[in-house]
Length: 518
Image (cartoon, rainbow, N blue to C red; front, side, top):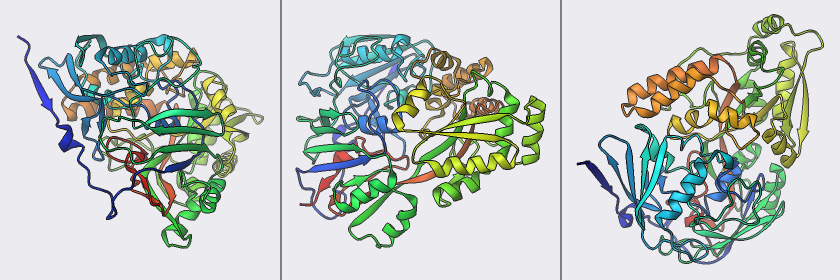
């Protein structure tokens, strides 16, 4: 008889949370939140840009969640059981949860949502994360069972990230649809009301939300304002209540109280920059040319020029001090090595590369252009508005781009989700993928697959370390730095707390528990 152990997590205890601050939260009000960009699509399963993830977290939810210490806690799933052989995960759903359209959440909805993410035709970002699933069954209305092809140690983490899948009503999205006519209903604390592309996204309080008494706000309005200086000016003028990515140049002034009425919330590791090569077409299908670029970059100088010196240079997706940080040879700036790599690649005097960038990020591109020139590399900068930039990225119409990436609690959510051959095929097909370089190495695939099966953390680390070293030996990208991001808000905004990675909402923190002093 199959043995299983049940992990019961009581929602009353897990969700208990004192008021943040001495004041009693007040209900009602409207929060206007200025973001760097607009939401990119109505489909919550695709295009997991940081902006999309942040905004979606208010109206879509997963089975489980992470707390501030990266422990897995209940969300739509109230408890779970794992079979002794590690192949079956049985999830008991929280009873009484309703979608924004008033429909009850059932196990059939969870099954359908997970299977939507698993279908390659849909281009979902959860495709790689869910590939371990062999089948999904529904024993009863509030129980869903995932049968895995093989033991997969980080599977619970997959069920706790929006990048895996969110829960929407069964059949609410047409399979393979490129565009949707509306946002499918979610279960989060706020429900969709209105979206005017490029102007604002309006959400209203979801009643009844499963966390009784929450949220406090009546309405949240997201406004896309691409220019950081304009965002700050809008905040100071009182046109918005809170902004993301407050300009680093103003943060010290805010902290010193030189900008009265404005406060700062810091996300210490929310920012990450990497230079990504398109390895699926010339010129950067040539590894030596990628090495030449890597040897041209001075990461500390980049931070000084673009981020006022805030941040830490890195050579991988985890910073030093993180449990998943891997020691490996560094590719530091060395103009002589850059020129030697160019010569070995056969690059002539007329050789020129193009960096695709976003308007407003000129300081980043210009410092790289200067560094490249001093290492013998001509670089053309093409600056585009956000929408055009994103289209070219999706269409694989670039040589190099500067991009980011979130710090994840488990390497499976980074390397196992992004640096696989399956995701590289998605890139070739121009479908939604997080494998932006289009990188594929079958040996790395094997290491990542093996690491996902093992529960022993030390052995998992050794396998991931081998995979990570192999990835960066081939230079599909150049990790540059982690740096803090800052949310700035008016004094009247109370209770807003973010995580180290910059989350604006979860079952414990963020807009869910934010209120307005009237």
